[in-house]
Structures are given as C-alpha cells and as structure tokens.
Amino acid sequence: MATTDTQSTLNPTMTELEAVEPGGGDHRLFLNHLASVKVSVGESATQMSAVEFTAPRGFGPPLHAHLEEDEIMYVLDGEMRVDLGEESRVVTKGAVVSLPHGTPTSSRCSVTRPGS
Image (tube, rainbow, N blue to C red; front, side, top):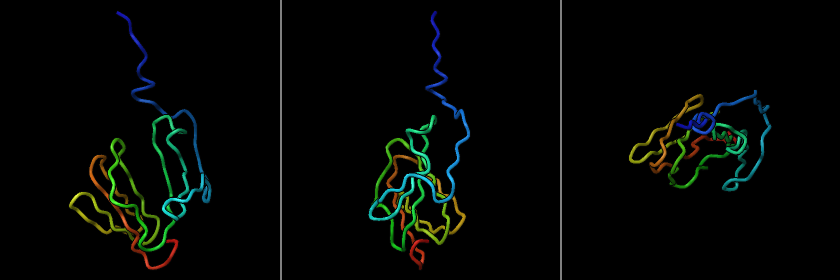
C-alpha cells in the first residue's frame, strides 16, 4: 500500500517569523478607503490573511457572504455595528468579532471622527 505525504497540504504550518511594522503593508483603496494588507493569502502557508481598514463613520462593505473563509475582525478604535444574518451587535475598541463563512454579513463604522 502506497502512502503519500498529505500533511503539508491538509495542515500547513508557518515556517518562519513574519512581522509587519505599524504603517506597513500593501496599501490599496477598497470602496474609496485605505486598506492595508498586512498578510495576503498568497504569502501564508495557512491561507490566512490580515487587512487593516482605516475608515470614517459610515464606512462598511455591502451585505455579502464568504463562501469558504471565516472572518475575524479586531476593532482598533471607535465602534462598529456588525450584522450577521438576523443578528446585529455594536462592538467597541478592543473587541474581536468572529464571523462564520456562508452567512450574509455586513458592518459599519459608527465612530464620530474620520480615520478612527
């Protein structure tokens, strides 16, 4: 019976230290606001990505659903309204939000000053 090495494709692991300094990353415009890609899927053995958004009050993506990837948000400053299916919640600075794939979601910054 032949065996194959499936460990690297089924459960990939990171092999080196990765760090992106404050202000670093690949800066792009997303819906006319700054999105700094800190880690992109193509750079990660685990297919993870991290993106920092700097946006004014009212910013947020339209209702959408991720087909394969779960989403985690970390609120750096201010507050944000998060909608998942029929549930809504307002979260504030320091909150971590976990959103499962396959369910319609949207979010809106509800801070009072631009850039927060």
